Image (cartoon, rainbow, N blue to C red; front, side, top):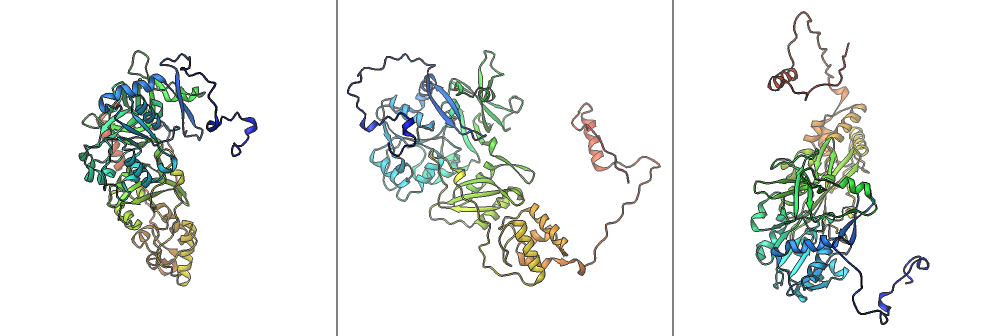
Length: 527
């Protein structure tokens, strides 16, 4: 009680000293029906203000009924309550166990934070049903001695964040994919924990995207474009969910409820859709593939980038166990930073990993820095905690050698100023210090202003400071080429069409009624 602030204004109920001797032993005489509110769980909002999703008794009851044929949960099962009750995965853990006669083991918080202690609990309590975020299970897979003794598990159910099946390779190679069964269940708080069901098998280890699977029977899935039109197979769109799992809305947030829970244009009886904010696509087998969050798309140097695509490429590299990519503010605007952890008995060279990424991705999608961590930080819900990721240090790992001569000292000062680092040595690499193509233009511009001739190509070809300095020349030591004057064309007849004009003419012949290239205004230049 002494540790709780402002107790004089709060009614404090001390459970450990609570006397219930005078309370009735019969069930509370409270009428409950399916539409009664069962719980409110708050999820983070894009504005920083959490929003409380309101779920009913009917929502939870139908979830257990609709999934029963897949799992056949019963009194023989032992579950763990691994997650916080403020995370909706716990709703599945609590009621999945108690409503089917199973045993529920409440995992102490510090045990949930220690994969070694949690593995010991799984063995001691002979847990049969394990629910995990992929990040938390990845840390469990990294515990030495995991495969020394058999576990009692018959089902491992993934949820809470995107699952990349390739991360399960060590487990599947040792345990197989039949016992325990590995199930991916995509879900959202606003649609009552789970939305889809997808068994994960050995064949999924070669896939490129997170397999979401098909809908729970009493739910509907729509993949729509920005105008709420259905998109074709293989085309990305936003996922909308219909059916019996939808929440009432957000507590005391009617405007936000109207924005996220919208009328279903494909349901004549007035049904609703929930806008998930997730990008998905249908594959040729009629299964959903998760592509990423709409709010995880960032714009870097004018390019719109899906961070999940870079993360997938990182996870595909040998030795990488976990990966997450974020956008950080830098001297030249937003820049990408990758965070990785190594697989067991593996080491990661950030420079070599960046170079390997550059073979598959364009320059603007290669992270400016890659930070190697022992493990990615997780929040209380077992998801990757992006806010806890450390700031990258853009510093060279090479031995420092001071610039030589006035020209090198001047160029080193420009590099340090543009890249936002304390000092630059002769062996430092421009891109390892956080440089990119836009920042190279700044370096070139400032170098020329100080009488040094340098081109972006030279920076890319000679990435070390010493190499770039050697390639640069003083403006006084080279002949400056004058830009030729464009001669005026004769206006006595028709002018030859430019390549762009020929292209427009050709497109017009294909579709004379198109307005795709109409201009709302024009500007004539004279001189």
